[in-house]
Length: 518
Image (cartoon, rainbow, N blue to C red; front, side, top):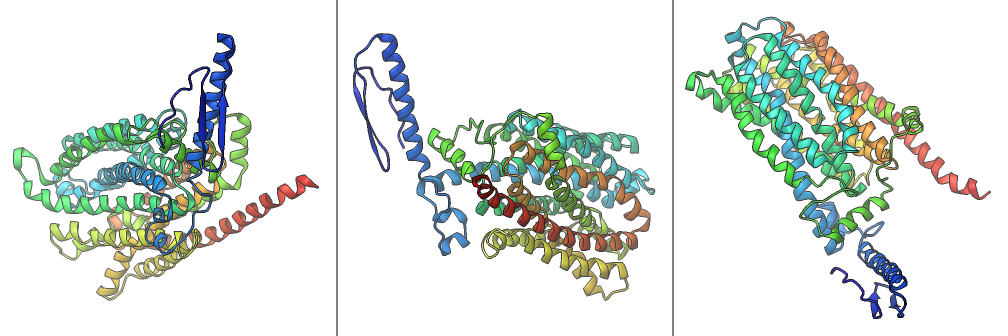
C-alpha cells in the first residue's frame, strides 16, 4: 500500500477503499477554515487507507492443510511478508538471547565437573551456593524488569542487561574464592532475569493465538541448545588447558563472553519493541498498522497507567496465582536437568571428561524435538489447547523420576530415565503461551503475570536445591528424584484446575452481554 500525499486546498481527492469510494471536495474559504478542513479530510483519508490495510488481516483466516506446517501460509501476502520480518527479528534475537542466557547460566556446572572443583578445592556445597546466589539475583530482577518494559523500550533495556551479564561472565575466569564466585553469580543472575520473561512479553505482544505456541516454544527450545552448546564447548576448550596460563574450565568462561557480546550489541538494532511503540527500521507504516490490528483482533490491550485499583484487581484474580503455581511446579520439577545429575552419575561410572560433557546434551536434543512437537500439536491437532502436551510430558516425567528414585535399575533403563528428562521442556513454552492468552485483555496484567511466573518459580529454586539436590549426595539424589515425582503429579492437577477456571471465565464473559441487555 502506497503512502498518502497531502491534499492541497481547493482540490479534490478520491480515496478508494476495498468496498467504498469517498470523494472529498474542499471549497475555497478563509485560510484558517480551509486549513481545518484540510486537516479533517486528510485524517479521514488516512483512516480509510488504514481500514484498507487492516482489512487484509482477517479475524479468522481460512485454514487449509498448509497451516499445519506453518501458520502464515494461509494468510494474505501482505501479512505473510509482515510475519516473515517479525519472525526474522523476534525469533532470531530472542532465541539467541535465551541461548546465551542459558549458556552463561549452566557453564558453572560444566566447569565444576571439568576440573574447577579439584583446582579450587570446592568439595563442600560451594556449587549449591553459587547456584543459589544466581537464583537470588534472578528473583530480585524479574518483576521490576517486566514492569520497566511497560515504560521503557525493550530494544534499549534488554540488550543493555545482556551486555552487562556478558562482561560479568568474562570475569568468572579470574575468580578464585567462593565469595568471588558468589558475588559474580549474583549479578549475572540479576541481569539474566530480564531475558526470559522480557522476550516472552515481546512475543506475546506481537503474535496471535494460532501463532503463539510455536514462537514461544521455538524461543524456549533455544535454552536447550544453550545447554547442549555449553557441553560441547567445554569438551572442546578442555584442549586449551594451560594456554596463556588458563585452565580448561577458565577458557569456557572466556569464550562464552566472546560469543555473548556481539549478539548483545546486535539486539539494540533488531529487537522491534511492541506494536504500540515500535520504531523498527525494517517495518513500513502499513506493516506497523497490520501489527496493531492483529493485536486488536486478539483482544490484546495497549499500555495503560498502573493504578491502585488495577493492581488490586490483578492480585485478586486467579490468573496470577494459578499460572504462577503452574510454573513454580514445572520449573522446579525440571531440577534433574538444571542440576548436574546425569554428568555426576557418568563421572561416578568412570567416563571421560569428553563423555561427561557431551552425553548429557542428548537430553537437550530430545528437549528441542519435543518442545517443537508440542507447539505444532497444540496449535493444530489440539486446536489451540495448551493442556494436552503438558499432561503428556508430565506423565512421562513421573515414570522416569520415580524410576530414578528407586535407583537400582538396569543401566539401559537408567539412561532412558536421564535422557527422557528432556521431554519436559516444552511445557514451559506451553505455560507461557497459555498465560498470554488468559491475560490478553490487560497489557499490565500480562507483563506482571508473566514475570511473576518466573519470579516465584525462582524463589523456590533459591532454597529447594539446597535441601534435595545436595552435591554431597550425588549421584544417588534420592530426595531430589522423589521430590520431582511429586511435583509432576501436582503439575497435572494444577493444569486441570486452570482449564476449569478458564472455561468458567469464558462462559461468564459470554453471558455478560445478555445480562446487560435484560
